[in-house]
Amino acid sequence: MFNKVLIANRGEIAARIIRTCQRLGVATVAVYSEADAGALHTQLADQSVCIGPAPAVDSYLNIDAVMNACHATGAQAIHPGYGFLSENGRLVSRCKSEGVVFIGPVEEVLNQMGDKLSARRVARKSGLPVMPGTEEPVSDEEAINKAWELGFPMMVKAAAGGGGIGIHVVHNMAELEPVIERTRKVAQAAFADSSLFYERYLEGASHIEVQLIADQYGNVLHLYERDCSIQRRNQKLIEETPASVKLPGEVREQIGRLSRQLGREVGYTNAGTVEFLVTPDGHFYFMEMNPRLQVEHGVTELLTGQDIVELQLQSAAGFPFSIRQPDLQPNGHAIEARVYPEDPDTCLPNVGVVSELRLPQGEHVRVDTALCVGYEVSLHYEPLLAKVMAWGVDRDAAIATLDAALADFHVAGVTTNIPLLRDVLASPEFTSGQYHTGSLSAILERRLQATGKTTTMHPSGTSGNGHRPDAELDPRALAAAIGAAAVAVARNEQQNGSAIPQGGSRWRTMGRRELFRSRLGSVSW
Image (cartoon, rainbow, N blue to C red; front, side, top):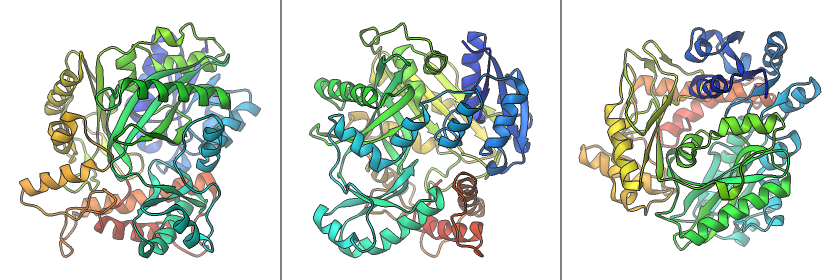
């Protein structure tokens, strides 16, 4: 096992990784920006190194700074967590050339599965059913013909996309041209790659993902599936495992087996997820693979009793797993809710400083967070405040425990989405298990009607911003929306180079775009 590991991340995920390292006797190095001086992860680690000023491009996305910190402290390996550099092939390459272990898949696999079109081809070769769509990037010249060939409704997707960014639903030909233009601009800004492709859109589908973990000796395991269908703006809010209330046993067995098959086909090592769309009648289609640790990995740990970060460390260190697939049996039910600094009625982001905090406690409750009194919810980084998880002997018990935990969660100084999360848990769609990726809009609509407010809904199922066209937006929400866009562009510039034409203002271009989108209820956060 490693003697010392550097965690190239911040917040709750850095703290969570450090705790496993502490249990294993592995020394840890935290990196931090000037804005995170004194943050929880720096207090938990054995050493901490400042790697730059607050902007992520100058700190957490700065590969040179991360590598310098690694060498200066004598760390043998780097754990990237999720987000930031977790899927950056250049960091993996630097680690390899400089004698540092990257805790994740090898560069070739990361690049192969990170490109959606490449991943579709590999999945089809591995025997997975793949959603009908275009097999090559769609040019502007062939956009109309390719759309007629595939049919509506369909999705226009960024080929280099991730995190729910660069995905738009088109219901008819009249919507196509502006959506293509918008998707290209968003993809170029977010990923420095404007390539896009088409994929069939499934109404009422569920988003199901299978957790994989693999050592370096061909032992590819699945830790069962998670249902991640409660989403806003293509980003997850609530996840649960297993998906037994929704999927028949034979379907669950099939997607687990095929996910392992895909992992073996590409020579996958370490942690990752295989993502599917599943129709109400049980047909499923490969969507993508995420070659990293997932935000929601904790619910799988509650279900299986396995520490996924520990397995990641074992795999990266070259130890064969002592467990085999028959050893992994699900126990009970686990569910997670993501607490964001968002208005529960509008889903618009919020900023502020935590002035009061009470975290839920109790049997079968787990909270992954870096919150403390004085914590600033700023525009610099991913705004996830906490992941609240609960386990139960069955689904009903897990839901009840999670709802009670959310009721006990108190934070002042910043608005959170906790009231909306509790409404979701109590909704008939969720309690019956008959929910899908478009269900949140209906739940939000009922919530707003109950409070006498109005909203604008989009046909794609994303929720509107809850404001009348002539209403004034909360200034803090406006600032957060514009700032989030500026941060996204800055991150991309560091990773992939300039995405805005020379002479243009990056923050103003994206800020204006996101401001207009926020008024339409589709701002990305």
